[in-house]
Length: 331
Image (cartoon, rainbow, N blue to C red; front, side, top):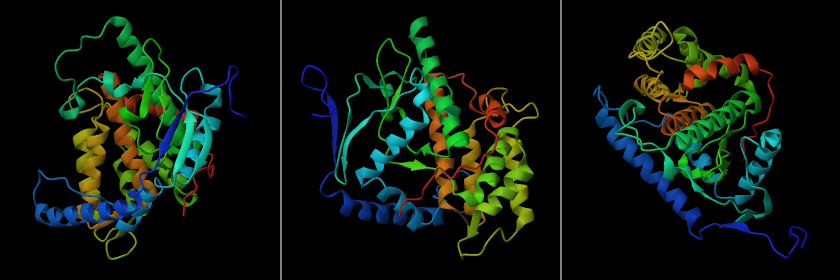
């Protein structure tokens, strides 16, 4: 009754946890890491292979298990709605009506996922084929892309609370409206207070192609697979990072082809160097790095010409590092 609308009812979405999901989550992790360990070892030395998860098994397991308790998703939705309460004309999140460990009741969202309207892209996130959208539809997609990107930068730099699975299936839209609604917020990420300042510097270094800072911060964020802090051969690691920066970031802070910097490929090659040097990236940083690549892919599928890195740079001035401890690592 307390949630009922005038007239006697309200439409809601009900999310129910599958009864076997807890057991299967443990099995899935074992399969994933067995596969990566087997093929990753055989891929070493091949310049064409990029097969790695740069975090420990325990950290990866914690990330997956956070999504099993639906009360965490309810908590995340509530926090996102609070953080973006002044942006309701740009971006929206469902309201939570009731939450239990295995059940979540939230606002019903009319429409469909943006997966239905994404532009097909290929290698380098280049558009494949032609797009038959009307001029009005292209404008609407560009507006949605801008809204999602603005939201993401605020999550990264202002709030330190980031949607960890932002793909087209988790963004709802209504035809004729440019305001997206974000769903499935069970997986969030952010960095812990001890690296907030260094993390801000790392993100800014990625956007301006500062190889030395990228190297130093990755070294700070990593341990060796033997548990030792830092990089064993710093000179070799620095040379590898510099080579990657030179490959993906031109002197004009554009990509090597004059187009936008391909952030996902850039980050992917950096992660591969971590594997080459037997390094493990701390879990909170690794989660946000993966989120960056997801955001770029979604943005470019809505607007193939969107320059993720170029549009990110002004946000570092708009949201200087006031180190809020917004992200809480669930136990």
